[in-house]
Length: 209
Ligand SMILES: Cc1cc2nc3c(=O)[nH]c(=O)nc-3n(C[C@H](O)[C@H](O)[C@H](O)COP(=O)(O)O)c2cc1C
Image 1: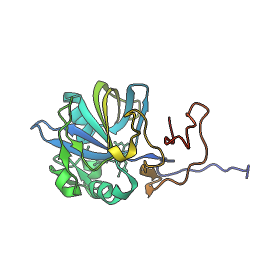
Image 2: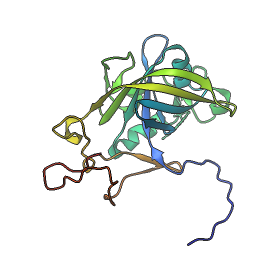
Image 3: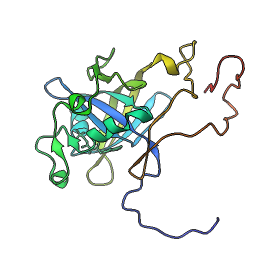
Image 4: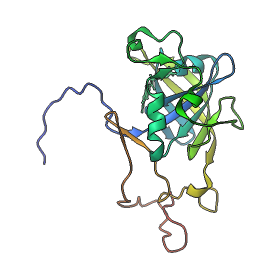
């Protein structure tokens, strides 16, 4: 197929990973929120967040946060967090569909665990947990949206997705959760490898980055 047509999608989320962001509330508790506008390169992390949300507000005052990457089996917990906000009152544009929740861990059935370098709690069930600190938090060009640039500080991983060298992820064992046009999707089998991935299948190490 090479034909195309012009469309007007109500949302444009062609597919990225679902992430749970932990940020610190003013009272020292941790707010937890699903997000998907996250990318990393080198030790820089970029986030796209609604400025009316509690996560963005927290980051403007307290720059520490954790990105918790859920595996595909955790999609019900992610969706339990979806209609919640830590903001009180609920921002007007969300009033019909959202409610305020201060204890998101209990609401989602997830377990808080202290981080090493930042104040926000990690999510114990998430196989990858990344401690970060915001460098800049600013409104984006579009009204109501903010952009956060942050420093990656420390990566925690469940042992069952890590190679013995404690550096590489076992890609065959890592089952990330994708968010695609508001649907939760799981990964499929490996299709191929980048020329820079070490091809060590058979040597006891697979899926090297
Ligand atoms: C899977 C998923 C991905 C989301 N991605 C984002 C995102 O990238 N940025 C954002 O601002 N909101 C995103 N949202 C919406 C927020 O989770 C929602 O606004 C939530 O109420 C924010 O909580 P908070 O106000 O406590 O920060 C996403 C929601 C879901 C379920």
